[in-house]
Image (tube, rainbow, N blue to C red; front, side, top):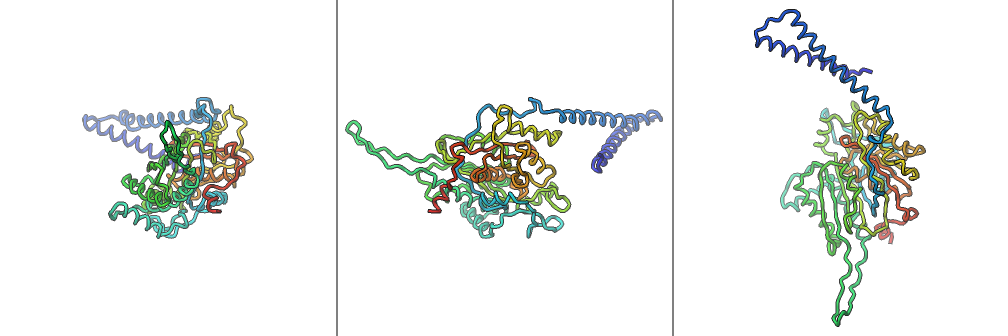
Length: 473
């Protein structure tokens, strides 16, 4: 079917080819002082452009037929994604926290995302025509919290400096999540043993108590944040560590990243163990910013009455606590994540076949079927449909209306999206889901798919988290 857009492109191509031939030919004749005849004029000004156009059309038709033939074939071993022979990764996933438009805790967000998402108009954000925009801010983020972040950054810098709205909002969402995970860490740390005295060769020796392992804090901030702010953010976070009395006896190390690369997050998830250290992974981002809105509007990707299949700007923060090797309280088995390359020529069915083959290889037919799929699907054309096809391919009995969570429909999160998905996986496994699958779509890098399963030792355990137990006491 020929659409108006394709027709306009064809007309434009014809005009460009004829214009180039005519301009080049007439210029050549004038330089050479040539007086062409009728035959030469017809040949160069009419037939030559037509030959070029027919050649271009034939080449494009051949390529299109070849691609269609390739898509109609079942996936060959060469097309299948590479799957490592290594067994599933083991994650000591002890706790998670988040702040999302769908909920202030992982449990609230999980329940909220199981309901139909309805985009809402923002109270103050406007487009270039002055019309209200669809957006998904975190409801409880107050002006006082934003001002407190600005004042703290200025205090750490020792000067007054402008702070972008997306940076203020991201940090205001991130710090409470960091506080919650610090409390979980404090409750999970082993008690420091008493020093022992022994007499060896007539001399009294005093052994020092065992110290907890060092702590690595990975922080992913919006891509727009200047690296010059990273040291200031670290000072803010170290101050909170000291306030909770966790600075003494622990070796804290902070790593900040502002690159917008979800693939790097999933690759790191497949290799999370770094010695005997505790790890806090944090991410925050906010698109509730006039500068972000203008950028998205220039790209013509915002949801509006004119473009109902656009994205809804959102914001959020999420984080997880990973225990060192030897802590078995929250062991989760993770198959993947696998990066599945999908080209523009692939049909949705071909893409889903590749992703299913990655998660369900022939040598593993007895894996439990996922009863929940978490994706970053949004309102863009084909996004939710692709996730639904994968969900039904993995488990034909899965109810896509409640067991397929489209996190992107609750607001775009950019850098915070992968971390929010992992926090929701933790909550879903905690709520009793046996297997949780994830689908992360990156328009440039392809798809990331993985499955998470509670380790057999913990399948029947439903104890509260350390922090929750401490609060109940």
